[in-house]
Length: 398
Image 1 (cartoon, rainbow, N blue to C red):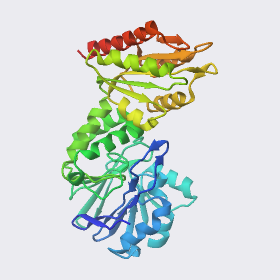
Image 2 (cartoon, one colour; image 1 turned 90 degrees about the vertical axis):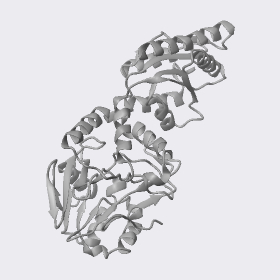
Image 3 (cartoon, rainbow, N blue to C red; image 1 turned 30 degrees about the vertical axis):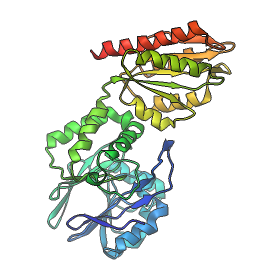
Image 4 (tube, one colour; image 1 turned 60 degrees about the vertical axis):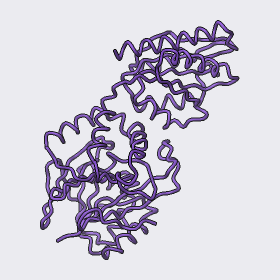
């Protein structure tokens, strides 16, 4: 359970914690997540976002500790993905079917499709405002961050940004604010960006520029997942600016899978070659690391090396899974090299190079292929490939 928290005068966090969830669309959520919702009291009482449908009773219970849910006058839906909109039909039934539901144009379309219901939609776009008593709610569409319906709601007088899925983290714990958890939250925020928003980095850059032009004062950022940024909201904004630029660092990620340890031996020799040139490296066995954790390491790496044995004229299944996932998120500004062992035909390196090419990564070597078990000469070739990767990356960054 989750006790409502007053985050500002008359403004409450009333969402729910999902302690048990461990997978979110293929993204590992080892520490669960939250579905945040916010209640703003005033001349009219306004609920911003709801929760996953199975947590609706908990949401209504939280609200009931503050006011009778029937006294909610307006619902604002910043994002229609079901972890934030699933409770809307029951919430609307509870507060009154005909009360206004504010959302973007695409939001109204999505909610109709989700629930086959025509609520009292009040469609808003960027620059539109809702003035109620001494409070002004300003809306900013954030299309494709990360759905076409997404929008922000900015509470002008309190300088609070309700940011939907942006600036969030999949984290469920006993700390609710950035100043409580400290820097430990940044790894969760980085993983969230790498696995959900990286694909939309150009749009993030455009949004940040638009917000800068608006010169908004932001005292607090309230995302729909994770902690609230109340002490230093500029910290997560600056991190998004950095991550969305996709600027490479002096770091290499070596990703591999192995059938009979041959490709694993190659991976370790490549890693040794990289380290010999004082370049940071992460060696990640796809059987031991979840795809979303691999993606988190990739986000700021300058170079990627991928190794796979050849199986049935293709790459190994877990490598194929990771590469499909990575390609969907479109990380940019990488140099790349492939390697792998084989018994008969040896197509894996060729397939991996094709994947690199499709992502517009800079392929710096044709790749190293070894038949059956690598001997000393083969491992020396792998070491040399690691050296080449490190030298090329250092030259690129100089």
